[in-house]
Image (tube, rainbow, N blue to C red):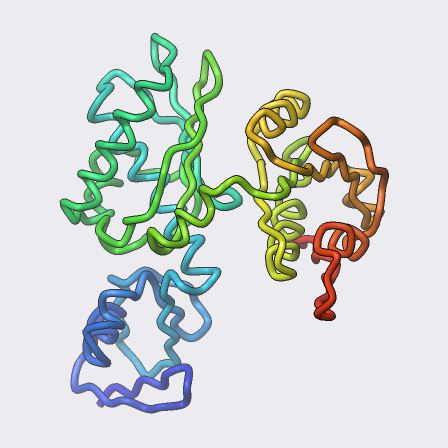
Length: 299
């Protein structure tokens, strides 16, 4: 008899080995639909993983931070799949999650434009609705050595990805498409509203810290975005100002190591370096006692 101990301490018994997906189904149809991965005796695994001996198992949904990252990572594969279907000669180079979304790097003889971006997003929506297995995506479009891909797991099927949008296209030799992904359409639409503030990193060394800072500001009630694109900071600042963003936070290596931020307003005025708490106080002028804690840097 196989004994599975769930996260809440409940013990369930089964007479044979079963997959993480089958375990979720045995608990309820809602969980079966929502589960994107599992953790078996501390090991993060995909839904096809077979549990063959007694184990402690946690089921992960896209509502959890780790599940949302898996969702975004999988969207990067879906983007590669759509790109190859529309541009068969495109060579897929890399795909990964980043910040609030995902990206895919590729090479193609011609540079794509905004109209191409819309066509690719439309194809992604159709592919997601068709409910493909992600194993099919990997086998058909990507090198199986996995060197170009972020480490899995990935969602079991494409239907889980139903709230995404492509946002930016950059590059000439190796081109990169960025997208954003959330759990549902309501979250996506909330994100698409013009933010009060955008956190901008200077280079890739500040990516994790910048996203952690963005999450901190959101928890305090600030409508904040992170712009982690691998593009020149002046270009990013100019774009956000043109879109009506009120403030930008610039994060470089000195800011990250010093634990402060550089705040600028939409008119280009530098409001100086300040602590994360000072930014919260300045933006919110809060009277409800909410506070921001400094974001933790990734190890």
